Amino acid sequence: MDDPDPHDDTSADYEQFETELLAQDRDVNGVNTADIDDTTAQSQINELLDADVVTPVPEDRVLVHEPSDTAFDSPTQLAVFHRGWTAACDADEEAE
Image (cartoon, rainbow, N blue to C red; front, top):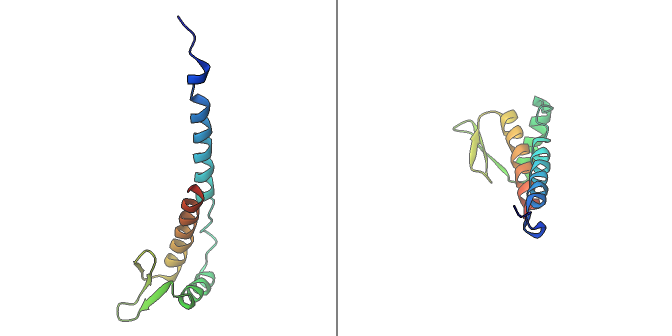
Protein backbone atom coordinates (compact mmCIF):
# COMPACT_ATOMS: atom_id res chain seq x y z
CA MET A 1 0.00 0.00 0.00
CA ASP A 2 1.35 3.41 -0.94
CA ASP A 3 1.95 6.04 1.72
CA PRO A 4 -0.23 9.12 1.26
CA ASP A 5 1.44 12.08 -0.35
CA PRO A 6 2.34 14.54 2.46
CA HIS A 7 1.40 17.42 0.19
CA ASP A 8 -2.15 16.09 -0.07
CA ASP A 9 -2.54 15.80 3.70
CA THR A 10 -4.89 18.53 4.92
CA SER A 11 -5.33 17.29 8.49
CA ALA A 12 -3.07 20.03 9.86
CA ASP A 13 -5.18 22.65 8.07
CA TYR A 14 -8.35 21.16 9.52
CA GLU A 15 -6.87 21.09 13.04
CA GLN A 16 -5.77 24.71 12.71
CA PHE A 17 -9.21 25.71 11.46
CA GLU A 18 -10.91 23.86 14.31
CA THR A 19 -8.60 25.50 16.86
CA GLU A 20 -9.45 28.90 15.40
CA LEU A 21 -13.19 28.21 15.64
CA LEU A 22 -12.86 27.06 19.23
CA ALA A 23 -11.00 30.25 20.08
CA GLN A 24 -13.80 32.32 18.53
CA ASP A 25 -16.38 30.35 20.51
CA ARG A 26 -14.47 31.00 23.71
CA ASP A 27 -14.34 34.71 22.91
CA VAL A 28 -18.08 34.89 22.31
CA ASN A 29 -18.86 32.70 25.30
CA GLY A 30 -16.50 34.79 27.39
CA VAL A 31 -18.95 37.68 27.47
CA ASN A 32 -20.13 37.84 31.02
CA THR A 33 -23.76 38.84 31.41
CA ALA A 34 -24.20 37.53 34.94
CA ASP A 35 -22.77 40.70 36.46
CA ILE A 36 -25.58 42.91 35.18
CA ASP A 37 -27.71 43.99 38.10
CA ASP A 38 -30.65 46.40 37.89
CA THR A 39 -28.52 49.48 38.54
CA THR A 40 -25.92 48.51 35.91
CA ALA A 41 -28.69 47.66 33.45
CA GLN A 42 -30.43 51.00 33.96
CA SER A 43 -27.15 52.86 33.49
CA GLN A 44 -26.43 50.96 30.27
CA ILE A 45 -29.98 51.53 28.99
CA ASN A 46 -29.61 55.28 29.63
CA GLU A 47 -26.40 55.27 27.56
CA LEU A 48 -28.14 53.32 24.78
CA LEU A 49 -31.07 55.74 24.84
CA ASP A 50 -28.67 58.69 24.50
CA ALA A 51 -26.95 56.93 21.57
CA ASP A 52 -30.33 56.23 19.87
CA VAL A 53 -29.68 52.48 20.00
CA VAL A 54 -32.80 51.94 22.12
CA THR A 55 -36.20 53.53 21.61
CA PRO A 56 -38.83 53.56 24.37
CA VAL A 57 -42.41 52.78 23.37
CA PRO A 58 -44.39 54.09 26.37
CA GLU A 59 -47.84 52.95 25.19
CA ASP A 60 -46.60 49.34 24.97
CA ARG A 61 -44.27 49.71 27.97
CA VAL A 62 -41.33 48.25 26.03
CA LEU A 63 -37.86 49.25 24.92
CA VAL A 64 -36.93 48.49 21.31
CA HIS A 65 -33.34 47.57 20.47
CA GLU A 66 -33.14 49.34 17.10
CA PRO A 67 -30.25 47.41 15.45
CA SER A 68 -32.02 44.09 15.94
CA ASP A 69 -35.61 45.44 16.02
CA THR A 70 -36.28 43.42 19.17
CA ALA A 71 -38.62 44.65 21.94
CA PHE A 72 -38.02 44.10 25.66
CA ASP A 73 -40.19 44.81 28.66
CA SER A 74 -37.24 44.52 31.07
CA PRO A 75 -34.23 46.85 31.06
CA THR A 76 -32.08 44.05 32.47
CA GLN A 77 -33.07 41.66 29.68
CA LEU A 78 -32.29 44.35 27.12
CA ALA A 79 -28.89 45.11 28.69
CA VAL A 80 -27.96 41.40 28.70
CA PHE A 81 -29.18 41.01 25.11
CA HIS A 82 -27.27 44.08 23.92
CA ARG A 83 -24.05 42.89 25.54
CA GLY A 84 -24.36 39.49 23.84
CA TRP A 85 -25.46 41.03 20.54
CA THR A 86 -22.46 43.39 20.56
CA ALA A 87 -20.06 40.53 21.31
CA ALA A 88 -21.50 38.47 18.46
CA CYS A 89 -21.21 41.40 16.03
CA ASP A 90 -17.62 41.99 17.12
CA ALA A 91 -16.80 38.30 16.60
CA ASP A 92 -18.34 38.41 13.12
CA GLU A 93 -16.25 41.47 12.19
CA GLU A 94 -13.05 39.78 13.40
CA ALA A 95 -13.86 36.67 11.36
CA GLU A 96 -14.06 38.66 8.13
